[in-house]
Length: 139
Image (cartoon, rainbow, N blue to C red; front, side):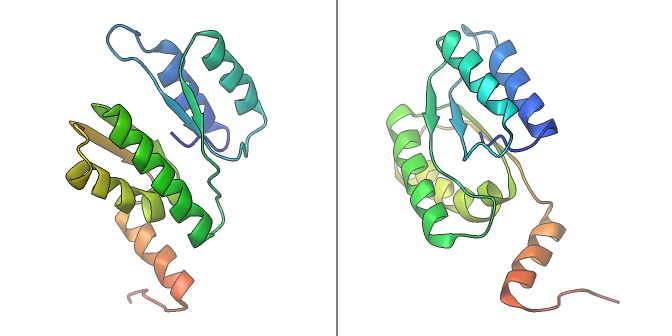
């Protein structure tokens, strides 16, 4: 999970801290801690014995760094074989999620459910078009 600012932090923290461990053991992935309050959440995760993996991800468009983060996440997911993956963030949706897709199909992950919270398809298209310097708006 990528927890960034306010609402996302609260949502991720609630999911991780209030999941019933016997039913849904949690594993949290953290980004570069855009929200200082999330540092407190990370400490609470560790205090409850929740495994925490910190992978540097960036909210700004840094293709090489985010590709590397995606490879690290793919390797971890392939090793741990989670049944559920729930992600947050634009970078997770645009850059990292396609790499995770490879993990589901080719790296032996036994994932039953992938839940991505990121840009809507329309927003994703506009964002990619903006990066490419193209106008995709319709009249």
